[in-house]
Amino acid sequence: MRLDYGKKGIEIKLDPDLNVTIIKPFIQKPLDNPIKKIREVINNPIGTLSLTDIIKSKNNLKSVCIVTCDATRPLPSNIILEALIEELSVAGVKDNQITILIATGLHRASRDDELERILGKKLKNKIKAVDHVATDNNYLEFLGNTSDNIPIYINKFYYESDLKILTGYVEPHFFFGFAGGRKSIVPGIAGAETIQGNHSAEMISSRYSRFGIYKENPMHKNAMEILNLAGVDFIVNVCINEDHKIVKVTAGDIQKAHEKLVNYQSKHVFNEIKELYDIVICGNGGYPLDLNLYQAVKSMAIGEMAVKKGGTIIAVNECAEGIGLGQDKFKDLLFSGMKPSDINKKILNKEIVVSDQWEIQILTRILMKADIFVISELIESEIGNIGLKYAETVEDAIRICLEKYGKSASILILPSGPQVLPLYKD
Image (spheres, rainbow, N blue to C red):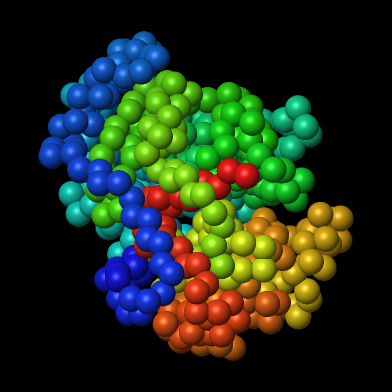
């Protein structure tokens, strides 16, 4: 049995007598010629003028900003960017007018090898690319406050650009409902205060801040309000399969183009289950989504959807970068020695207010429901002391679980991260 893990995957050996259910994603055939298809879609957009006509409507256009995902995302950005820049060239936009803004949110800056993966060799030394910096007000524009009094800081270069284009991919997200669309703005190119307001303890604790919940999601609503102030002229969003190949493309209006892919994902990703399981084995979908323990919390939230109260999640993520570069506050709380329930309560009561608190808030929420084994490149001393459990292999973790639940324990395996999600209805 193969699970997505790092760049190569990981094989596990299962006793044929175990009570195992495996749910794999449905087969999604990649586009034969994605660049051609993206260019076609750009010229036949949803809910807006074609990109060429938008450019014609801009008098004396001088600057173009294209926002794209950072290195923690599996999007083949280079393909989208190549198609998009070819269309911009046809419309008369010169390369030196274009800046690619990498939506790092509060993540670390991009390394040189990652820039090549994001941009592709063809564009890396041809088009200017910069990382967003969420913590430096010199790079941010203040646009006022939202209706719920969250300060709005947006990347200054983006805000001042004559033509604003967002690119990204759509899949279910563990607290934003779905990735893509407005998420390129918040948290992608927003200031730290804006991100923290959007990802506040109250927002995260909402029952609507879960995988697959869209219009009712408070973070979605807040992000759309911010997006309407920041502005966007055009988006190109895609869906990808388990091999991170493009299978679906939309372009045009931020809301209509994004919603088309949200509807597609809603129909094809969620798999209804009739029972909750004693043991759920799951991961983040391999590299680059499982680069660190911080990102691995998403996989644990997948397990949360299918595990019994008092059950066990076996989270399988390579974590080649350890806990996560730049995630110091997350690490501090991970090693705080506090009970998960105490951390969660202190976050909700605003006794703990730190950057990236949402990740530890979600982790502690899951730990209050189930045990979590971490299977990764990390050693036991690196996984903290608030309740995460260590095992060297998936097989070891299963053996320990069977000692607790018995040999007939129900086991669910989700081998491909958020490409397939369990949906349990009482």
